Image (cartoon, rainbow, N blue to C red):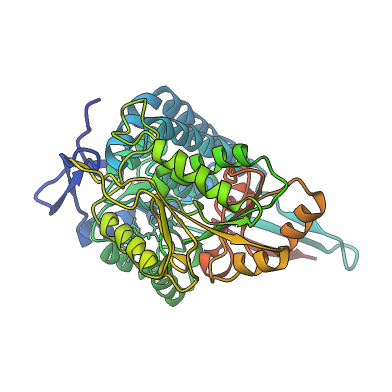
Length: 476
Ligand code: NAD
């Protein structure tokens, strides 16, 4: 795999430097510098904004099935380039090649979904109030969109931002994470090669706060979509409010996992350990707070710890590994501090808890049990390879524990009781609930949270709707 030259994409031009400031991109498994990323200047951002404005009328006027053809073609190109792109994502982000292959497949499916869904942006005709009167509701593209995508899904996150806007007929400026630029550029290249016209998509990098400030204070941008932490999301929501821009906010989570006493414990453990350590836990819907019925608690904790200790950790390019490094060096002290705080509050360390020796930002898969609610990890998103496990006695108690935090992104529960499943569906405060499953994100389902985890959804019919506005027309 040859790591590609890094660039910006503005108005159809791949801009590779030209004296702009750069930041190094680091392979988190080896700490080697992969390349130098040029950062957009204010003039670059203004150029992208102006190009969006110029390209908007023609892209909006293109029939949705023709826009769909381009998205279908881009999906096809991604599938053809799958192995090369998966390797790029692994060296940039650290997650295993198994995971980046799956992520690439999902990114392609996201384009396929929006290619089709754009043709179904139906309006409606309302029943007449009097003869000769016709009342219709139509959906229109919202206008140029700004998307901010983090590093943890270096392919999937940019694909969601780009796919929704393009499918709806909107130009889009996306600012992917500076840690994982080549992955995002590979996604954009598939779109350009498939025929997205110049000016319709732009990929920019920079100092995140400066880029978002610049784009969100421009009247050209009509909607924004952000995936990242709650504090940054709140800051961007305030900026967007100044211009009354539509927002989609995919923020953090602290997903509870309720394990009742009627399950096959070993089977749940196999699923739970794989889900917990996927992408080293750096996933907004990662299962983070395990609540296990007291009658199976000790067995569950021991089984989790044994599996965590046996997990093959190492460079994600090596097929035998099941967990790679943390994505950047900032996560190491953050994860360590959370574990130390939990232990200081009386938690029991059952596995891991330390960095792994040698090069790379590797951290041992960690299991903590018996953690008091006062520990920081019971309240703040861990965003790392740490499973926290506590016991519960009864249904009402565990629902209260699950809903205790201001987060409301994902939640999971394992039980064979149909009655309990119904009650869980009614009572858990989350945007997505997996019952006997950790698979909650597919292109046709809405992905989003409630409470401080954000608002709006990506994917599903809701994902397209986020990039559209509603217009009512009455004729008499
Ligand atoms: P961070 O908050 O500095 O950055 C998170 C992401 O937001 C990055 O991609 C960054 O480029 C972007 N960002 C930060 N400030 C921004 C701004 N003012 N305008 C636009 N974009 C901005 O944190 P980090 O150290 O990279 O990651 C740690 C935390 O971020 C985690 O604890 C987690 O809560 C959160 N995070 C969440 C997700 C998610 O999927 N919801 C993904 C990545 C990170």
